[in-house]
Length: 218
Ligand code: NI
Ligand code: MN
Image (cartoon, rainbow, N blue to C red):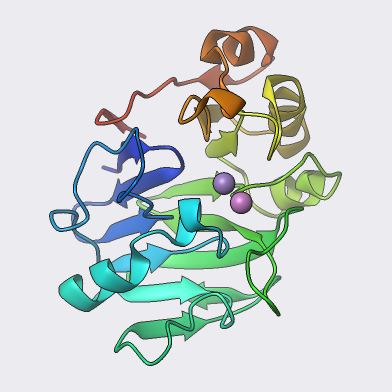
């Protein structure tokens, strides 16, 4: 059993019953946040890049929960705070207690000198979940889908800073994903979208529109 809980914007939790994998925990200052950073649980925290709406509350949560933070070293350097980290880089795979984490490219700025933005392919609970992070559409998504059969693709659809529904629907096609979940929209006016537009554009995959605070079984 694998549960996906959406905490708003691009923050979500994957829980296989034994491991809690928290991704891009931007909660403080997130108008969509459905949980407080002081209450969220994590065994692992995955960070895609250093923009505030992704790295968010990572250091505080990591110190409180003793979670292991996975990310690019420049991004997960929290200035001497006592945080357990696994530094990795694009193309790398690390084995974890729950399965594996593969770091894949994203086309986006990093938010910090020396870092780059990334996405993740996560093997957990017998499923493969791809989170694109913040990115534009790029042709390499085809190869991400060729290496691992993507069960769920979690994709930004807000536009302006990332893909919009049109490009995100093309991403689903390139990835060959069986299911898609839209994120990174309606947090602010600038990324306002109707997720039903994405639902209508996606062909050959099931789209799950999950509201902040909702959980679904993957
Ligand atoms: Ni960003
Ligand atoms: Mn963002």
